[in-house]
Image (cartoon, rainbow, N blue to C red; front, side):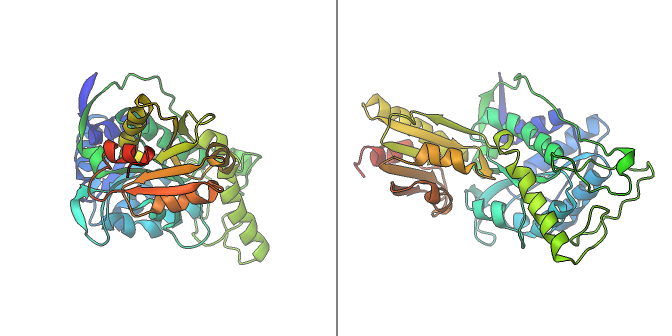
Length: 368
C-alpha cells in the first residue's frame, strides 16, 4: 500500500500505460498532474513541454501522438473549454489522445480551488458537429490508476480521444492505495504496406491502422471530411460514410468500452445512481441504508460515453425510485432520465463538495 494523492495515482497510471509525451498549461486543480509528469518523463527520456495555453498544449499532444508517442494533457475549467476545437480535430483525424479534466467549480473562472462535476455535458457534447469520443470516470483511488491505463488502451484501440473525467476532490485528496493490480498495456495497430494509398480504409473493426512515421506512407492529413485516401471530399455519400463509421466503431465495441458497478439490482425498488467522487458518498449511503433494513440498489457509472442503452434500461427500468447523486445541478439526472421508464427520479445535488452520505441516506429512507 502507498499513501498517494489522486494526481500521483493518475501520473503513475499514465507512465505505466506508456505515456511518453505531455503538454500542458498550469491551471488549478490539474497543475499537480503537469508538475509530476515533468518529473517522471525526464526519468525515461520522454517529452514534456509547458505551452503558452491549453489550445497549444492540446495541439502539441495531437502532433506527438501522430508522430507515434502516447500523449496526454491535463486541464480544468476554462482550459477544458479552450481545447474543444482540437478535440474535434483529433476525432476527425482519428488520433489517439488522453485528456484529464480535473473538474472545478464554474462557470467562467468559477472557484478554482473547489471541485465539481459540472463538465459532464461538455465532455460528451462539447464539440460542434456529430462526433464521438470516449468519456471515462474513475470513482475510487484504485480506479484512477486502472482507468488511466484503460484510457490509453482505448485511445489506441479505437483511434479516438479519451477524456478521463475526474474532479478537484479526487486529484487533491490522499488515500492509501495499492497499485499492484495486474494490467494490460495496448499498443496501436499499425498500417499494412498494402494500404499505403488508402490510410483510412478499414476492415470489420471499423478502425484503420496507423501509418508509421518516416516509412514512405503517402498520407494527407486534413480535418475536412475525407475519403479513404485522406483527400477532402464534399460528397454527401462520403460525408455520411465517414461520420457513421466514426460513431459505429465505438458502438460496435460497446461491451469492451462500457464499464459500471452494480449491486442489488434484481431485488430492489429503489436505486442510487452516481459517478466519480460523488459515488464514494453514494456507496456509503447505500451501506448505511442497508444496515437499517432498506433494500436499495446501487449503480456507479464509469463509462459516461458512449452509454450502453440496453444495460442502462436493464438496470434502471422497473424501479419505483431512481436517486441520482451528483455535484452539479442535474446533468447526470438529465443523462440517466431517458432510461428510467416510469420511475420517480429524485436528484440529490451538491455544489462545492461531494454530497454527505447521511443526506443521501435520508432520501433513500424517505426522511428528506
